[in-house]
Length: 113
Length: 115
Image 1 (tube, one colour):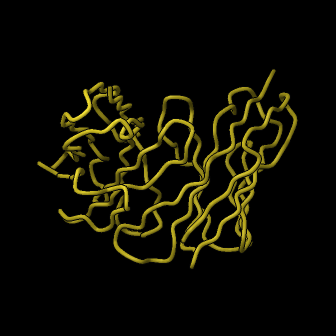
Image 2: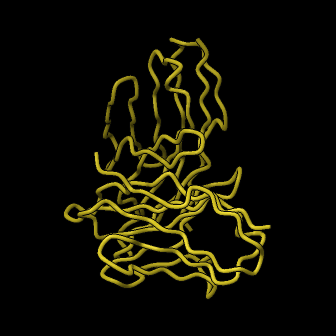
């Protein structure tokens, strides 16, 4: 069974204090790993897709990396507007046309000014 | 930017009643999904839908649940006889064609409260 575990559950940062979020996964075969941002009362908002170990993607203050067992989301010099829950999800190797996502529990990030 | 829209944003229903949650996926997308998130828990997959049929469903998606694409723009989730444990946020998502690793794009959800 596919499993995704995110740590820490919550993270409090001062503005400008860089940090990393972890996403560990167990899947029979990884077709893609996805990072989403979720604001309170909203749906997940797509950030990145990673396909293979060693791959990196960047967007503003966020950088996502992937190894064979885990992914990291690095937040560099965060601002208060980066406060959100960050979700990691995996899509296993093609099993059916559906390609469901299995999500982790998320990391709640609070950036204080 | 195109987005997935869901209505209503909040639905309150008596236990045992039927409820229909509505979604308008992004217009050129052909893969559709429903997920739910019980308060404080993970986002969970319910069902995926392609070419007018269910392509995959989870154990949660039992006979009380059904999905339909009644016309060219809407995608609905029906719960026939709601239970207290159906209270959750329900998210619709859609995905484009082409590269099968295109991301799923989510709506802002319907909060379903069963009394």
